[in-house]
Length: 218
Image (cartoon, rainbow, N blue to C red; front, side, top):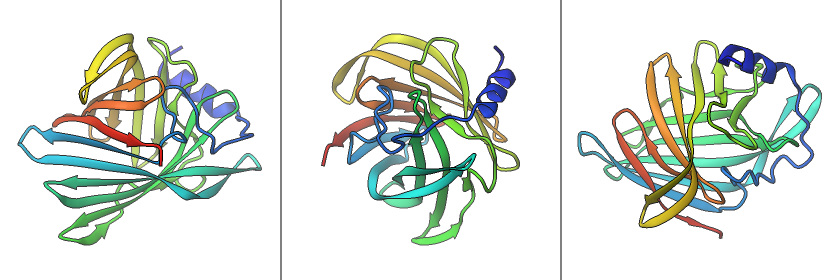
């Protein structure tokens, strides 16, 4: 099945959401961690740090008449110690184990002030296509779209490898998967590594590399 057909199939099938905020997908267990931190460097030497925190509150969306509460992850991005982006991401687990992405509210920050919200989008407002951030049992060749928002962004994802053994942040992980992300309109490619029971452990954006430093259960 090609990417367009896969996206159409996902869009036409309306998932059920019995326990949407209990996100226990093996490769993206967002409910497991209270917070995580990734650290890295851009190719020009800029130090990067991302802190991700699971918030106590939720946000409701309507999916074909269903009220779906979404888990909120606050993602703060720092460059050389300065906050440059403060984002709220919205996720929910479907009954088949797929983690869906409902959008993001982005505050882009310069010199301590919010300058714009470029990159923000919400399901039901900017798009009627639910994003897929992680399928229930990712296999080589599987494809999906985490973002399909006309006029704002499109992100296409594909599983490139599975069963990898990877050392990241001083730890050795087994059964790791590697995904490729193609982002439009920028035309950029990124690669990400996910470990079962942990989630994202390494990402390779076009201009650097970031690695999971630690996660906390509380």
